[in-house]
Amino acid sequence: MEPRTAAQPGPPSAVPRATTRATTRARVRGRVRRRRWAGGLVALALTLPATGVAWADGGARTEPASAPVVTAARTSSVTAGVTERRLRRGETFWVYGALTVSGNRAPGRTVVVQRKRPDDAAGWRTVGQDTTNSAGRYSVRIRAGAVYQYRALYRGSSTTKSSWSQRIGVGFTSADRTMTSRAHQMGNGIGDPTSGLRQVGRSVTTRSYEKGLLVKVSRSGQVRTWWVHGRVLAEYRDLGGPAGRLGAPVMDPQCGLTRSGCVQRFEHGVLYANGDGDTALTGLTGVRGEVVAAARSQVGYRVRHDGGNGSRYDWYSKYNAWAGSNSPWCGLFQAWAFKAAGHASRVPGSTTWTGYRDAVRRTLPTGSSPRVGALAFVSYVPSGEASHTMYVVQVDGSRIKVIEGNTGGGGTLPSGYRGVVERWVPESQILYYAYPTY
Image (cartoon, rainbow, N blue to C red; front, side):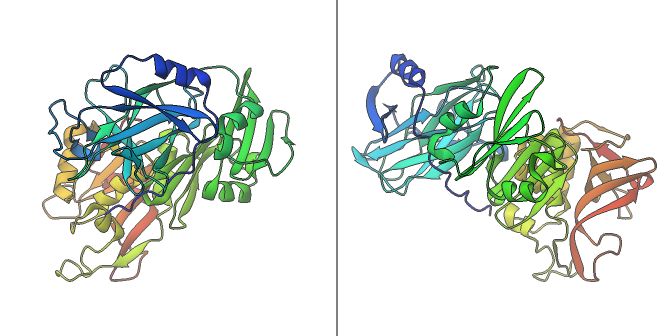
């Protein structure tokens, strides 16, 4: 099973006044209760009728209109606020608040943060969760990627009714973001400065803080300031920071991913790091770069394999454990890589090889042209059916470079082992390609 995501750091200590005033003016049904956050923050709690929440296909959580009611004696109330409602695309913000049960703070409970597009009738999708602290408070860190409405949800228990907060809209602005305004926006999420300003070339300025590095980039008539932190920051500094091969960041990292992973885009590539100590980089950019970096971080992993004789070492990889499956794991690895990069919805998931293969052919366009970011399918069985999948990371004439799991690597791994390998294969071996949307 996938491990629980670690709690996110607390939100900054100031929220724009427009956020709370707009929320205060909202017309809602039910009883609205003011809560005061430490440092003078005001968030609103909305106590609504209790409903259950169903799990949708692919792990997305969706609340149907006719969800069953949780029958319980005690009432709950969850508040939600955001650190800023007008962001630059790719900036980090926090959804935060508090949970009470029967009017008392409720520590040790799971609060889920969900989002939906304003015009989306499909329902709410979960983007993060946190366990309330001793004061009943939670916070979830999010990288802004599109215009969404957000809310907090407490699902309740056998003795406590569920509740959810009022929805909060978060959008974008194209205004400049100076280092001063970014530090103010993040508040205690970044801490105090630990260095002075450092000029890197003509257009980049950096400053270190207790919880990361701010990088101000002034280019093309715009000023943006991005945050680099955690394991990604350690790797970034080793590579020379903004003056190194990756250049300046182009957005904040996406964190809270599988295995406590973080992935961040830079001018000349992508960095990935997770809580297991796995790190990787690629010169590819965008979503493809994020997927490649996550997949490449696993290269070198290997596990015993007894050739299908039914022993405990038959299908015994960490990707099998993640998916809860004892099936061949080449497709599970590809699904894991997309999930680890924050893009699980771009490929179908299944706990069996045939289920994965058939779902890919049913839901993704296919063809015969090799492309970076495509899934390549080959056959190693007499029937000629596709029996293995790989991810294309480079195309060079009549050969392609791939990252693949559940493979002996063409003899590169010791006998009796299978693992994750990056290697060149002849393009002529490929039966067909499937093309995720990027």
